[in-house]
Length: 269
Length: 269
Image 1: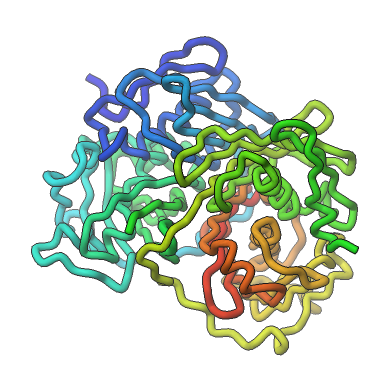
Image 2: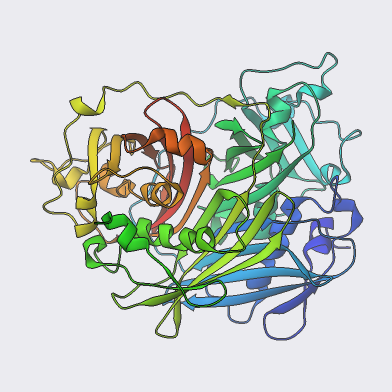
């Protein structure tokens, strides 16, 4: 039996770089599916293309409107193929609309000078952090195991509270555990709950409008991570007139920065 | 006489959401024009469109190949228009190729809860920081006045040196000074010299492959900045197998975070 994530991001080829997909309701968010699984679907199209060159390097997904439960088409178009890199434009079509667009860059990578400048956060092991209870949260949350080290959602606390810091540090992996690959990492990049829920004690309507992920790791490094916990760290810089940014890091258990990811989030009130 | 930036990003409407442009050689980089001015051109197309809703909120530009000195066409397509937001896909066509693609989100913004969580760096005023000499650098650099507080390029030093930190802090504005607007801010987001030149003492071939900018400020806030210096801060997280990321902040002189911006950079060796 396949993993829930594999069922959710499955695409059936329907001609040259056109694919059919459908997101199961077990990845449902408040309105439409979880954005992370949509990001994984958008990345999966060039991943499955016969024209694919190399591995994912960067991905930007723009969420324009809700995606329904019915099937959709993903159209991927390579706009430029160089010797060692390839650029893609990707669109999700459903009911005559285009609710989601994306772009991705793939590359064949080679050894160069290298350095990890960012430091791995000082944290207790995953086993010592409490699991996030998913009962009062959208269905997609139960497909992940999140162990929050610090920076949980204020409105979930016994006594809802505000915070001066939007930083969250958590251990995270698919539930049930699943070997890491690029689509799974693209989905994990959208797992951090909205920063307004860390700062403020009340629930307000929110939604990611744009999500960009830079994949620092190559395929071999993702394979070495296997199905173990990743460490995630996220924070926001400015909350202003209905939108805030979020930056985040996704680390391997062995201390490598697998991806850095950024998003712009809509919030009301 | 118009400002050099206005001449560089000028677009002539050539039918519905199709525009003709050409980048003057005074914005030349090593190969093709400075990426920041291309980012400004890509953003300028939806800015000039009769279909435009609101102001720029986010912009992602993917650089696939060099843009030549001859004219090009920019084709902008609104893929989704909501009540208060609009999504665009944008392509630059030249000689039958698509060297640059972009996506942008525009929005009508309204007052909400707001907070600036990031802190303004502790720096001396612009007048006390030395100007970056542009003599040995590509032509575009002379269109900016950069006053480097810390984190210059190692190979420009009398005795070229490596650094453990990729952080740069600098004051920056157009040269000659020009009132800030969204295209100018989009260009400024790509002004930070490559992080490998801060870390390493030698010159190597480099190029931005993907650039994302989140505009925190609305039009009124940009207007208040006028033509004064912006404070920029940039750093990299991981350098690995030919690519590194860069995150950066662009601050108004009065201490507001106008934009946060991220990019993925190719480097050789």
